[in-house]
Amino acid sequence: MGETIEKRLSDLGVTLPAAAAPAANYLPFVTSGNLLFTSGQLPMRDGKLQVSGVVGRDLDTAAGIEAAKLCAINVLAQAKAALGDLEKIARLVKISVFVASTPDFTEQHLVANGASDFLAAALGERGKHARAAVGMASLPLNAAVEVEAVIEIA
Image 1: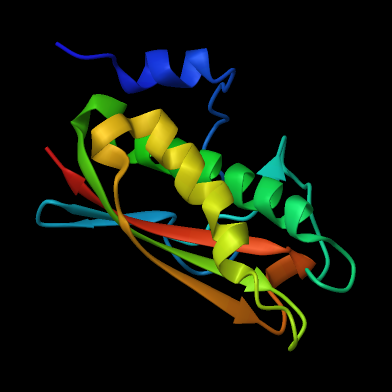
Image 2: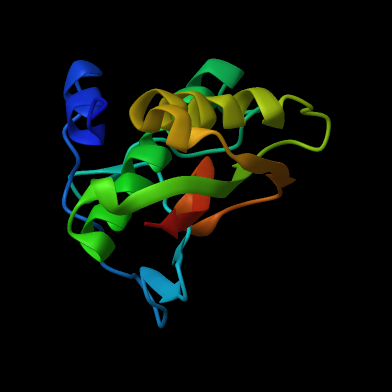
């Protein structure tokens, strides 16, 4: 058997936080058939927003990349809460990365790499995914980035 997701996370120096509770009238995740859909995850740590503002005005691309990685860590925290065991992930199907950015900012795809690169490293072959990277005028709580995921369950 190959390397586990938990081992990969450990090798990356990442400990998953407790999954964030919803902040409004929605569920943090929903399963339908063999698919798990996570609600959008913000760059939170210890219950506090870590990266706020607009990329291209308040933040540079590198800060956006780090925010996207933190969002992806929180996506996996939700997956673990939903499944109990990350080894139940058959594959990451798609992520959507929303970047609060100025109208002239055109590096949303680079910001999204923060999430994509982390998830590929954490999930290995199961982490190859389709993706959308979209610029937004603003995001909840003034977050710089938000990431949602569709995950196939084994």
